[in-house]
Length: 319
Picture 1 (spheres, rainbow, N blue to C red):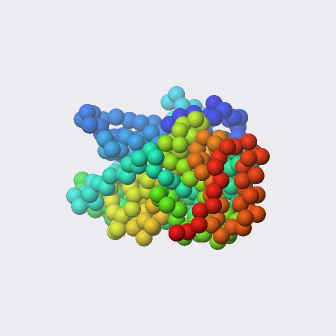
Picture 2 (cartoon, helix red, strand yellow; picture 1 turned 180 degrees about the vertical axis):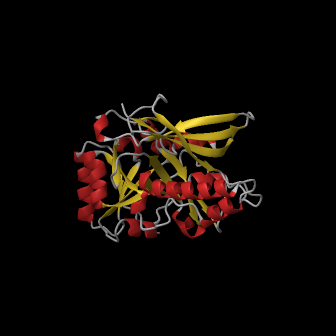
Picture 3 (spheres, rainbow, N blue to C red; picture 1 turned 60 degrees about the horizontal axis):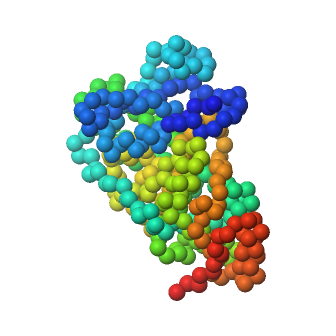
């Protein structure tokens, strides 16, 4: 069994995925006024969910001497990398996450080839975020760097070390974060459909909701975090954005109303991951592009039926 952040996600040959050669621990304070530690191979789902009731003090990384797959503490160097959470007095006011109703309509717009992959191969594709067009994906805003520099009660040595470790963590975050993006809306957004459907009439939109998405990934062994993106109208700093920037974006992207499924994993070294799912368990309806031909509509409806799925296929014209 391979150990990944927060849970075991699958059984495979250990030689295929080497241990990264380190162990990470978050040190955090809880509402019980006690100090706790949480081990993770990467900053994953479980620790993020603790942030609403906890404050991360630091992250400590222990390295191995010879990179053997040892986790019992007998083969770890004493050297520790310590990244401290900046403490400043003018940090951005906490912006709570958006809590969606279980029945809220959520959409994914896609090309025909991606739709075929879902129906034919029963896969959902997660892209590594450094493959996105936005080169700031997964990066903390510049205000986080300023916060490190201006943090109170820090020595010059601690400041320099935190800056170094923050830079390393940001680069690693972009290469070890895999995301699947959705759109929150009670109606179809035709502009986003055209953008993500490749401006093709032969493209597809699928409708689902948060409950179905969460249940779908719970049925797998992958610790997928599902949550709405939080948008800010200026550079911001808080410990949520500092440690988990993949869930925060500038206000210029708020028209996307993004709901994001994220998986943090080390060791795959691939630009994308495909997670096997049952399409019938999470797709409520399938829509073909409103400008698609009648022949294309019939083709998609027959394709879904012949694949053994009883999912409604519709074609909704713009109002």
